[in-house]
Image (cartoon, rainbow over all chains, first blue to last red; front, side, top):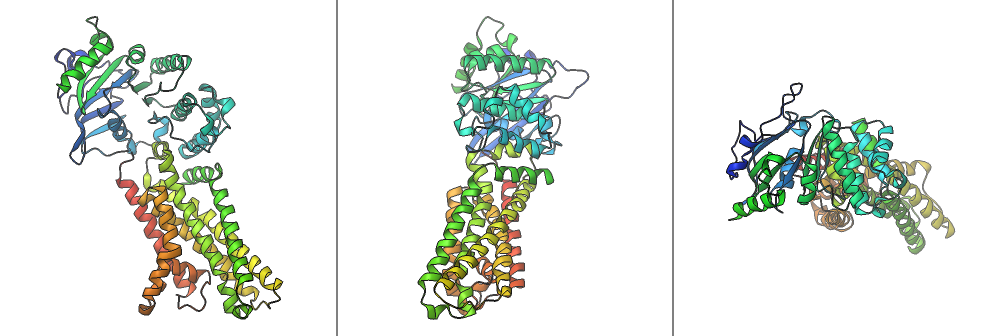
Length: 268
Length: 248
């Protein structure tokens, strides 16, 4: 991961934790381009600045924690990255292109932005079948992902009967339908029981070890510290740090301590 | 587009929403036709024009419920958040709205056809039960049935466009009900002197389906072309708005 170098600069970076210095990109020679590139990205809603000159990039085969307080601009950044919102200035690209310009994006990017993006009266299987039809993904893949997230026995139940953890897993199944190369997950551990959290951790690790890239937005710092290779921390829409986890916490401080220190500096 | 259409049809089949709308429509049409067929004085029902006129309420209900079906296909996605995974899989928003328009027009036509059939059947049964002679020939039922289906299909497209523009489900549904049941009737009255009321979309639907035979409406073919223009304009406005707006 690096801060994008041909765009903006970190606006309030921790001097010891500057992404440019601390996290040189571990480039895969076979895939030289970053999977995700956010460059000088800004988003304003009237007078409110949600994202402010944000730049970073992610390389293949990494698990990255996207951290920041509530209202820091994480969700807005993810929505722009996924083509659901337009930036005011700057750009956000996946695989070198705007999300909207990807051909059959479900085959390259899987994303879960909310834990309950389902019609409550539709079954889990039909939710996935509708997505698979739209993405032209063969229907046997629906059964595969249902099996993968352990929802096969509940697949014909209406989603409104699902627990929050089951809804999280159904969302993840939807993201995995196209066997994507990049996973973007917003608070994926919410509602999962300890076994589910453990499964998610192993899954994301295995996904990255096989060349996939994962971007996880989360508030659960202890879990993030056990899951990710690197972090991007933002507050008030600005980049605070983009660094590999071992380098960020190399001085013996925990991720939580560093996070609190960084966000406190930004606030003050 | 075929893939998107198949996905939209599956969404429609996989909840009971449309089934509920259809059952509601059948019940309301039946009620309206029986009330008119059994309640109006016999002297008001002894001509072909008056017997066609009492099909009108059933036709309007079919048109309205088709419009609600179209509106719910997009506002339901926004309400439940499924618009996000839908647009993540298919980022081409204009194509998504276009698929919703076509996927709503087909069941919309079914709503119109069924409403016409129930209206004809119920009103005929009610009149016969009262010993009133039926003055309508088989040819008189073409417009209520086929015209009603076409009008309902086009209003389903208008519903999709309105839903995409307004986004809030309750506001869209109330707005469509208010327009077709009240607002346009008020405007039609005010505009009759200008002869302009016949150009309104509800009046065009009435003309296509042979309602209000004693009201100066457009010829069915002209009304069909006009309503198709309204449907195209609504769908275009809805898809353009969806394309420009951020998805929360």
